[in-house]
Amino acid sequence: MAEVLFPKRQRCKGCGKGLALRPQDPVLLGLYCAPRCAGMSNPASRAEDAPRECTTMREGKKVFKRRYRSEGEIPDRLREDPSTSWYSCGHCGHWHLGHTRMGAAEKFRMFEDLDEDLPDLLVKLRGKASHKQVAEVAGVRPIRIRELESGVDHPENLKTLGKVLKAYRVRLGVALPPGR
Image 1 (cartoon, rainbow, N blue to C red):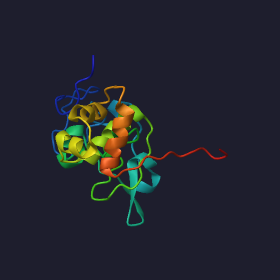
Image 2 (spheres, rainbow, N blue to C red):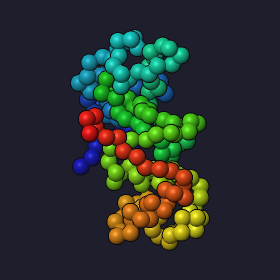
Image 3 (cartoon, rainbow, N blue to C red):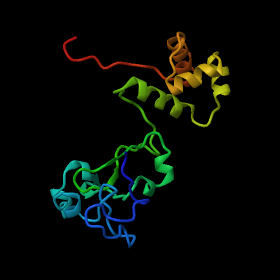
């Protein structure tokens, strides 16, 4: 059974004290009130000493990333943007934002897992257009676009994907390993 995490969890799993009694109080891994309770070492106090997962570069200086106590504290506009990722930091025990491309046009995207990354890309490319609108431009049935976006297999998926990408004015490419 999964653990109940902050903000539903009100007490530290280690010591039993109240979690986040004040807005500035830390909550580590959604379960603990302090590194000692979480079985972690104290996080670095200077950004220069912290690992990459906990820092970022801003204006040429290494600074700490913004710390969130739970996924729910991440602003909705960032959580709903498909180009944004977040993760639990192994160094400080908080949530950080990973890659976010808000406000910048994406020019290149690598695919690690086609079953997960391709539907994500198609939803992002469609934007606020309806399935029906895209289907009319691509010359396919709207159900085929829904299938592509949800990862449902269909014998015509490859042909449909080609038509949809052409409608979006997107070209696929591959990165070949050196020496091929």
